[in-house]
Length: 149
Image (cartoon, rainbow, N blue to C red; front, side, top):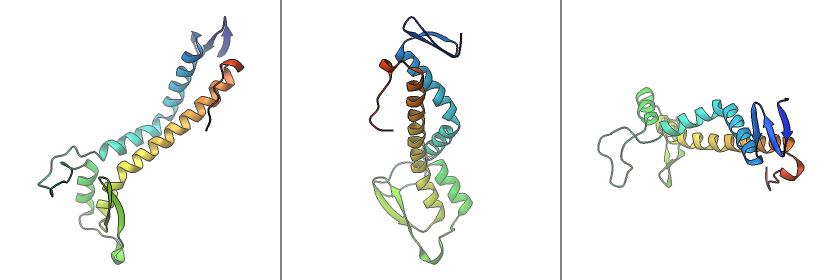
């Protein structure tokens, strides 16, 4: 058998025999997800390292309990390094933006957001490749017509 073949209204794909159209889509999705995993692990690391899992000293009332790994180590490594000329960069703090000129605070607050953005881009790339590959393999009646790419 070839890598891709149709038998009795089912599909054979890369060693997986008798796949229905849904099973074929799932196998292609898993294959593409694994190909993208290198970038996805970076996204996960950025998201997880920005979570407030470490204990910390007392914080102001209403502040989130704990601190993140990125925050702790960027503040250790960069101490009081500040942006020149009093430049302040908006950083996300909870649901509001707060300006800071400390380089460590800027890094610690933006890393998880960059991780989420990277994850969204990875999922978009995966879904686009899955759609293209599935529609290339599947019979015309089984093809998926997605509204947006």
